[in-house]
Length: 296
Length: 298
Image 1 (cartoon, one colour):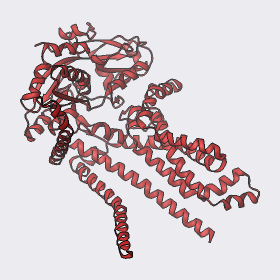
Image 2: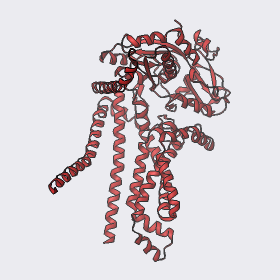
Image 3: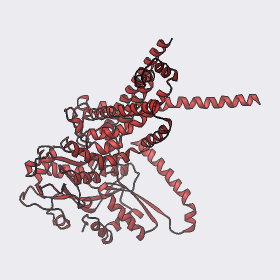
Image 4: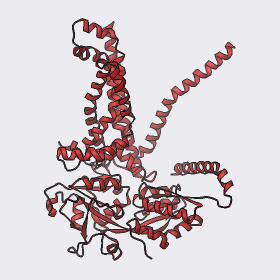
C-alpha cells in the first residue's frame, strides 16, 4: 500500500515536471489561464458518458484538461484510493472496505449520483423468448435452468454471458438479479457463466449466438440484439421493457444509480466540473447517450 | 597508448560482464517479488480452499484448480496443434524448399510472429469463434479449442525459427552420407537430419509451449473465461479460464495487500514454477541427447 503510494507520488511528480517542461513555451503564449488537469477513471459503463462530458466541458472551460480512462468500477476506486485520479467513475456504490482503505490513506471520498442506468437483458433476435421473470433470470444465472425449452424456447442449451467480476455491472447484477435483492441470499453465478472482458464482447456474442443470454447497460444496446421484458417478484405477470419512462417511474426493476467519487469535498476545478455535470446542460448529454438523467 | 587500450578493454569487458550477470539479478528480483507478494496467500487462505474447485474471488472463493487445469488444457491443445505445423514448416524451409521459396516464406512467418496477439484475438472473437460454433454445432464458440488454435498460431513462428536454425546447423556431410548410402530424401530427413538436430528442435518446442502458456490477451478474448473444472470429455469444446487471463482481468481491481491480491500473486508463482519446469526439462533433454550424440561420434 505504502509502496504504491510512494510509487504513484513519484510517477505523478514525474508527470507534473514533464508537463511543466513541455508547457513552458505555451504558457508564455497564453499567459493568464493556467491549465488545470483532472484525471477521471473507472467504470466502463460510464466511460463514454464521461468522455462526452469531458469533450463538451472543453468548450465551457478550455483551460481545464480532463483525461478519461475506463477499466472498471473497482479499478477506478482503487486508483482513487491510491491517489492517482481526481474523480473515480463507478456503476456501484463504494464498498465499506474501500471506504476504510481510503480513510486509512487519509481521504474522505465524496459520492455524486451523476445519472441513472437500466441493465437490459438481451438475447439473439431469433430467440422466441421475449419475457422472463426475475426468478427465472436468477435461476438461469445460478445454473438451475440450463435449456431454453424450460422457458418456452427452442431445445437449446443456455449460454449465460456476464461481465468480469471487476465490473460494477457484474456486482449490481449479482445483488439485484442473481440474489433477487435479498441480503441474506449468498448464492453466486454458475461457474459455467462466461465472463467477458467488455460490453462489446457481450453484444458481439449475443448478436451472433442464438443460445446466448446476456446483460448490459441500456446505453450500449444496439439494434442487433433483442431486449427481454422483465417482471418483478411482486408483480410476476407484468413484464416491462427498459426505457427512459419505465426507469423514471421505477417500473423497470433492474436499474441503478451511476456514481462519481471525488477524493475529498471537491474544491477548485474539480468542484466546478462536478457542479457542471449536475447541470441541465450536462444531463442533456446523459439522455443523448441512452442513459437516464438524474433529476433532482 | 597500449596501456590506455588495455584499460579501455578492461572497462568494456567488465561492463559486458555486468550486463551478463544482470539477467540473473533480474530473475532473482522477480522471483523475490513474486514470493514476497504471493506467499502470504498460503497464510491467509487455507490450502484446502486454495486448491478447491470454485473461483469467485469477490465472494471469497479462491479455488485455483480450475485455472491451473484450464491453462494446462489450452497449452497442451495448442502444442498439439502447433507441433506438426511448426516442425513441418521448419523441415520444409531448411531441407526441401528451393531458396527462392524460402526467401518468400521466411518473411511471411516473421510477419505472423509480429502480429499483436490482441489482433488475433479480435479475429478470433469475430470470425473464428462463430465459425467453430456453427461448424461443430456447440453451444458457444468461445471455447478452450478456439483459444488453443489461436495460441497455436502464435507459437508456430517461434517453433519454426528455432527449429529451422537447429536443422541448419546439421553438417551437410550427414545428409550427403545418407543420400550416398541410397536413402531417399524423406528417409534422410526422418532418420538422419531430424535426430541430429533433436536437441534444438526440442528447445523450439519448449519455447513454443512457454509462449502459449504465458500468452494472455488472445486467450482472454476467446476462451470465454468461465472458471469450469475442465475434466469432462468435451471440456476442450467448452469455455475455460486460464491463469494468465485471470491475473490480467482481475489485477486492476484488487486493493494492494488484500487476500485476493495475494492469491493472484500466488497464481503468478504457479505460472513461474510451471515455466521453470518446462525450461529445466528442456535443457535436461537437450544436454542429455547432446551427450549421447557426442559419445556416438567419438
